[in-house]
Length: 445
Image (cartoon, rainbow, N blue to C red; front, side, top):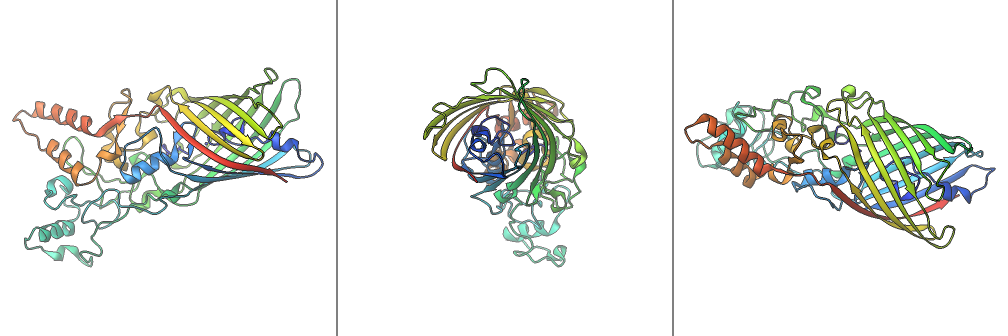
């Protein structure tokens, strides 16, 4: 959940992906003040990003075994509906996000013989079992590997499992459909006064499909007898694995929030917001997390057919989570929205100044989704994290095994050299800037 902690206020429509709820003052102003008002916003975004968290892009990069990047094309459909009471004080909102591509699961660990998703198995035919199954967790897979090299296998170790059917490359639960989710918000908008305009409410978020709990600490996951992970010092066989179906769950979290549109500088509509998360799922380690936002924007050519709206938001995390307990500026988000009638297009850039908030397994997940590789991101002050492109596959495994097999005759030298070489090969810089664009249409009824 940490990463997905994943998963998203601002005074302007241009920041819908950064914070919720979406304020629809402009569209509402056109509606009758004596009837129920319904406002819809349908948007296609190039990537699902929320509060500086690259939800869609990072998930897709892990799925495909690709390096984290400032720009990832992972399009999503994001419809919003707001329903206002006749007085316009009560507001009900639903916001959904639905991934449009790469929705199916994929074999991301690329192991040749596995009993199930995330199971141990060789990455290439000649890989020695000491590297991939030092604890003899799956003797059947070992014997299938033996047979593939021309030797005589002992299939009695397979029991009822059929080689080539039950012990074969398998997909992991990583399809982008697992990022689909729905926000439901209940808001009360107080009447505007000389102190400004204040709104308060509560929202809930739930995903529709189960997702790997890759960002959960190992103690919150169930043991997996066919667990993946590196073997040997300094990392031991993994008994907790994110691909364990028993450790896969739907994401659900909740927040209280207050918005205060300040009574000055009205041309840029400065709005201060505070969110407090109170979720108790996954051990409740996100409960008590606070996110503070200051947003502003100005619409040029207001009420005309062609309009331009720049916007800017500053987001501060008062404890990124209860495990890391790090404070800092989480995101600075700027955007430009260009509108033609009810249609709009926008481009948004996000800058993350305090990278130490993100330099943690509870933000980016364990290396390759594997909690036993937590030590692979052992330094939380260097701005570097495990690169998904260097985790799995025959090529990466061959290099990592060669590093593990280093032997100079001096154990102390070997230990330092292995650590240095492994980190040099597997780590990458955390992207400090993120970009996305979108287009959509807004209608009121």
